[in-house]
Length: 342
Image 1 (spheres, helix red, strand yellow):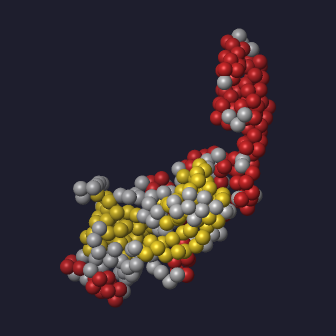
Image 2: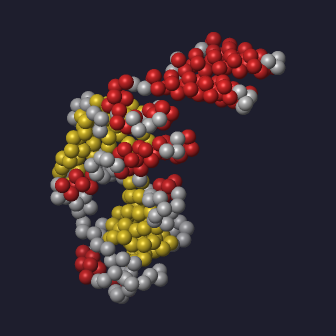
Image 3: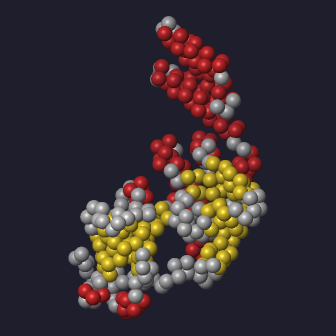
């Protein structure tokens, strides 16, 4: 460490003496030394320093970048890369490095929960070794859905969207898992703009949780959902029920005794994500019913699904159940043929 600091000081001395070429040459050598020592943060800092000194030192800037990327490539764990060869084969060297060094790796022992149904954990999990199981908790009952083994991933539904976990994952043996937090996606859109779409394309091949539940002939929502159509009014409120902002109109998608799904125009993913966990009050009245059947229900936003170039879908869990008789009545009515003025 002292040697590195001393050489940095020497490079600064060269600059103070007006010997820019000597300073750049020394910094370039330090990039290689740091990269070989897997000190990539320092290597990147040295490379940035070269750029600051002379943005036209293109040979040193380009070659130092290549040295760092190659060193990162060599630093990727061979076992991990082999387990995920199908994914890495779709990525460039730079994308592979960006992906790998964004991962956090941890080990779970048999019986440990990796994530739990109802948790807010927007992560993509990659199983490097061991074995885990996906289960659905239905009351006190644990319903087995599938085993997850080396080379399989879980969590794409919460990673690419804004939603709570709909299942639970439990390690069945000593299991090593690498995971990505969804926060990396924002940075990638600047540094590796194609990486997100490549990863989403790769994960889209997996069997969906909803398909697994359908195979078990289960409905994780439990309560029957219907689509009466029309518009509703949504009003964000704080924990005490005090309004936050003004009501806004939303397109009703479906409703049950326990919750509602509506569509709303949101153009930015980050804005959509801010809705998750917020309290909201929903007002709705079908035009063929009188005001005694109006719905005014408070609840919590438990899912937000961002669809580029389309409306965002928002899932709300009501604090209390609607009367079943009201759902039955709405089910018998035709959808509204015009917008509601709420």
